[in-house]
Image 1 (cartoon, one colour):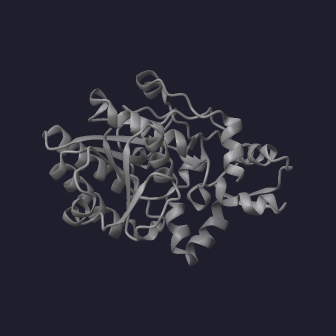
Image 2 (cartoon, one colour; image 1 turned 180 degrees about the vertical axis):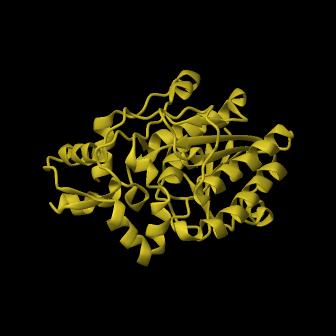
Length: 304
């Protein structure tokens, strides 16, 4: 039985903690507040993950350290992420733990065609460049032999408990009441959606496989759906009809961005919704033997 430290109690952190406990591991979840994830068999501690010393003092020796942190406020990423990532990387180096990072697709920036792991991290927006730099730091430490690091990248989250963390799940409460909803960009472009439970399974598999370290892996995900199709599938899973879907783009989005700092941040990512945004997960399926959670089950879990 290995000791696993999961930093972050969002939908990925909770799913990962549950997966690891079911596999018989000793699991600690660390958050700034120490809040309970509700996962039986998990130890919960309060710790500032940007302070490697205090994190290790609270959590003790660990075999695997998972970065499942997910600061929701995009407007504070530049302030929050660098010290947080530096603290976690330092904690992994000092403890000798495998460092498994929950990444995303932002580092690639706009792409033509399906995204594979051999694409360069060529983002032009500041959030994409930031996430690319954080992985580059971990990769450099890995290449220097100071840590064993791996990053797992998924697309937009769906599945249990995602809520405001997902573009589809955030509109489900209104859609369940039969109200029209607003979605970013075009709602008719194929888009990959990734179940948080599949992120968790891929993180655990990549961390446990020494031959998988030192690179990124894409989470096995279901075939792409448009935003409108995905929301319709989620509603159909609980026997509800589709609702009108309105889109935030062009002048409407520009007007919203003029008064909302969050919308200004999201506007930088609008390219993800204006064209096909498709993840290629072939490498991870072949390496780890993981298949995505069946889409019907994903939709039921997303519906809540």
